[in-house]
Length: 213
Image 1 (tube, helix red, strand yellow):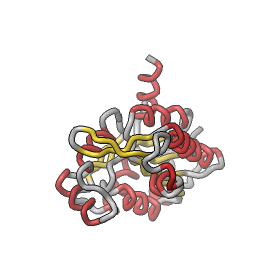
Image 2 (cartoon, rainbow, N blue to C red):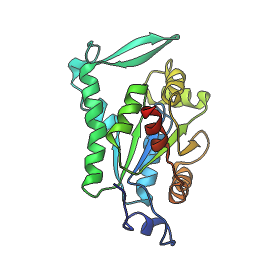
Image 3 (cartoon, rainbow, N blue to C red):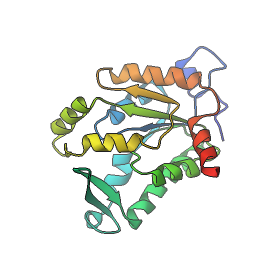
Image 4 (cartoon, helix red, strand yellow):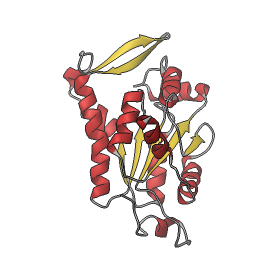
C-alpha cells in the first residue's frame, strides 16, 4: 500500500519521480521536539497529523492512571517510567491501526510517538504491514531535554533521560535527527529530502524481517 500519486511530491519537489511515503513516523522521548517537528512537516506537506498526546493521554480515562490495567508509574534505574497495562495496550493498538485506516482512505500521515517497549514497536510493524513508512528517530542532548521538561512544568524531569534511552533501544531508523540546536523547520526539510531519496529496504521492512527470524 503505497502512494503513487503526487500529493506530497508536488508540494516539495520539482522532480516528478520524487515520491513521499504514506507515513512519516517520528519516535523520541518527551520534549525531544516531536510535536514541533510534526507541525513543521505539516506546514510543508499535505499530511494529516496524529500524536501520542492527542490519541493516548487525552483519551485515556482518569481511572486508568495508577491502575494495574491502565497507565502507572514504576521505578527503573532511579527514574520513574510509564508502564502500560492491558487496557492501555488496547488503546495503543487502536492508535497504530487508526494510522493504517487513514492511509487506506488515501491520506498521508505524520505521526509522533514515544515507543517505550519492544512490544509496541513490534505492533507498529505489524499494524503497518504493506504501508510505506519512513521511520525517524528524534534525538536531543540530555541537558537540553531536561531543561525542556522543566520548562513545560507538567512533565517530570527525573525520567526524561532514561526514557530517551528506552525509546531508541530497539529501533532501526531510516533517518535520525537531533533537535538540540536545529530549528524544526530545518529538520523538516532534512526529513523530506531524505524521504524523497530513500532506498530499500526500509527500516520497517528490516524490522519485519527480524520479526520473522
